[in-house]
Length: 209
Image (cartoon, rainbow, N blue to C red):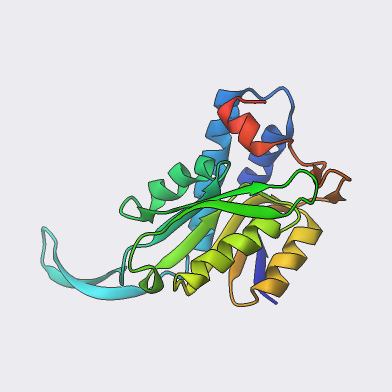
């Protein structure tokens, strides 16, 4: 099973409650998603590798730690995942950004890929996959499948809200990845929406119906 971390910081929980509110408008919703992503990213990136480098301070030269290795890759699952990218980039401005496009069949709820573009060399990067909602887990499993098929190895998955079904499916399909979520909700309804959830994250981020 994957390592699952519920990031239960009070600021994150407060902002998730604001996201849930049907009266929260598009502009505020978009800002909250970005803020939550940044707060969650701070926790998820605590194990980034460091190396000692030489720096000249105003007083003297010293050896001091900096993040080592290839730049990180942020990979949003389109389209809702785009809302989380800015928050992670605020922490790691030099990170590369890839994209995975998936749509969910309304009848079967199965994901289908329509776009995949990843930064190279992907196998040398810490890859942060972002999607606000982990519902059935189908899209998340497919996204990680695609990344692994392109050579990705060091993968973290960040979502704001997860259903127990999605967490189980993703962690069983990819036991080697780290999963971070802001809150685990009660269940999925018959339309595979998370309950109580926050509605359709993509529609609320981009103001569409």
